[in-house]
Length: 200
Image (tube, rainbow, N blue to C red; front, side, top):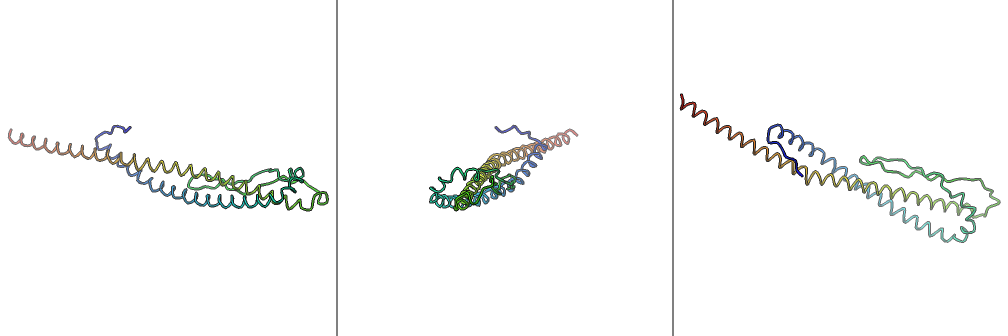
């Protein structure tokens, strides 16, 4: 609901200041929206690449499935995640997570007590887990960027479709009213001048 505006010069100045403020913020919001779009395109490309790499790695590991099942109890402590290291990156004022690395538990083991293929299977499983975690972080990035894009688009629409048009209309109404007041004042001054001249 539009607020009632006062039809005076002070209100005219306030409305002009508001309009200048809106027009100054709008290009910044447009630039932010473009940054989000570009970053979303990069993240979505990375997601597709990670999904493809994870799928091929999973297919490769599935060939080793019988061996993995045989070594499952031995492998379990080695693929346990201790920490997923993530750093924060600023994109157009939003903090998004960036994948750094996965730190696994690393208990000691005897090379003679484990199967010769133990390290190969372990490395493939760890790589699959790394890719899965990287993909999870990329999906989180996409979610955050999409939300930032949505909110920025809403603000742009608010400025373009509501605030700026309302401000223009208020400026027009105030200007028309002040012009009418000025014309009326000139008319009153002319009548007063005629009355003074006639009275003298």
